Structure formats: C-alpha cells, structure tokens
Amino acid sequence: MLQDLSALSKKIKLPHSWRNATKSELIKIRGVCLDIDDTLSTSGKLTPEAYRSLWDLKNSGLAVVPITGRPAGWCDHIVRFWPVDAVVGENGAFTFYMEKGIRKRIETDWGAKKKDESQRKFEKLKKKICLQFPHAQWASDQAYREYDLAVDICEDVSPWSEKDIQSLLALCHAAGAHAKRSSIHVNIWWGEYDKRTGFEFWIDQGAPGCPGKVPAKDSWLYIGDSPNDEPLFASFSLSVGVANLKKYLNILEHYPNWITQAESGQGFSEMAKKLLRALRS
Image (cartoon, rainbow, N blue to C red; front, side, top):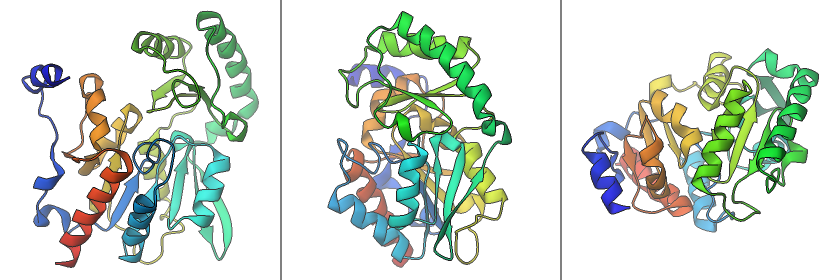
C-alpha cells in the first residue's frame, strides 16, 4: 500500500493532512455535509463519540446534512431522529426534511418518478447480474429503496474481489445505468442525478428544513470515505476524507482537500473537533 501511494503521489497531488488545515480556511464554514456508512459509522455501528460529534456540530449553529446511498426507509428515520436539517438519500434521488414537525420531501429529478419504467429496466438488469455473478445478493435494505438497486459487495456477504466489482460496474454502465461504488454496496439507478446534484437541487429550492439564513455554497464542508463521494470532493471547495479513503485513491480522479488520521467515525469526530475549535477561537 505504501509503495502504491508513493508511486501515486508522483502523478497527483494527494490530500493534505487534516491536522494542517488552518483557521483561516475553516472559519467561513457554516454547514457540514456527510456520508454515513464508514464515514460517520464504524463497522456498521454509530458510536457514541461520532453521534456526539454530530450533535456538537448541530448545537454550534452549523447546518448538518447527510448525503447517503441509504434508502428512503432509513432517511425517514434519520431526518426525524438525528440532529440534522435534511438528508439527501439514495445517492441524490430525493431530500427529506422536517417542517413544523411534519416530514416532507422533494424529488431531485422528475424522471426518477418513472418507477414503472425503472422497474422494468431493473428486472432486465437483475437477470444479467445474476447470470454473470451467481453469488450476487441485493442489499438487505433493498426493500426500503424507491429508486435504486443496491448490490451488496461486503456488508452482509463475503467481500467481492476488485475484479468482480469493476466488472459489475462495467455491466451496469453498458446497460445505460448509473452505478456508483460505496464502501459496502454498488448502487445502480436511472435518472440524471448523483450525490452532488441532489444536494445542489435542495440548495436551489431554498434549502427547506434549514433554519435561518441558508449557508452560501462555498461555506459548506463535505466529508466522505468512498468512490461514490467523488462528485462531492470535486464540487465542494472544502472537503475531507476519513483515513479509510486511502485505499481508493488509486481509482479516484478527484480528491478531498484533506484526509484525517483516524478512520470512519473516529475520523469524523477528528474533523468535528478541529472545525469547532477553529470556529470558537
């Protein structure tokens, strides 16, 4: 791994250590967007430290918005019970938010509402996937999804080989679908959106659910851990990768500004502590 990173560093500018982020860079931040799996969570669990950090960010007056590949069923729970202003779900298909105690939603791409058409495409693609990958299993949260198909590549199954993951992505792209790899799933969908456009659409609608003045687009920070976060690393002026992102650097084209020392939830807490110290000093 060290040799790979050494060779890679000769070709690209790798992220700086989060420890080297300066106060002048951080004091303009007014909102934090975050991935969930293996960014906020650790080995499938939301630790007390990471959840406390989420509350600390919210209680400091920052806007907080998870942007996740997780399904609508999860997002309904998250926006109701977590200290967040909104949640962008299924890799950008929709945003849920609360208004006067009522959970509401906006759709990012009206084409995503063509569920019947999408389902027909999914059925054809499922057959192709099962034929080429007899061991394939759909994610255990598939029943709670509205717009995408998630193939489990390591959450509740033995980890797929890198060769099979790349072949699956190629198969989906050849079928005309969007396919993004997270740390646990390959998410597949039809519709012109991704994590970036989902968040930007919510902002352009006036960021419903966000109290007070909506932070300007260049005053948000994004933190993530995997290839499906790449559109956000590319579009946010300030972004952080938790340390477990390092294993994907050789397949990314766009990188975060910084990377934490710790992985997963500990890396999220590392980000939150330094950011809050900068804002309070």
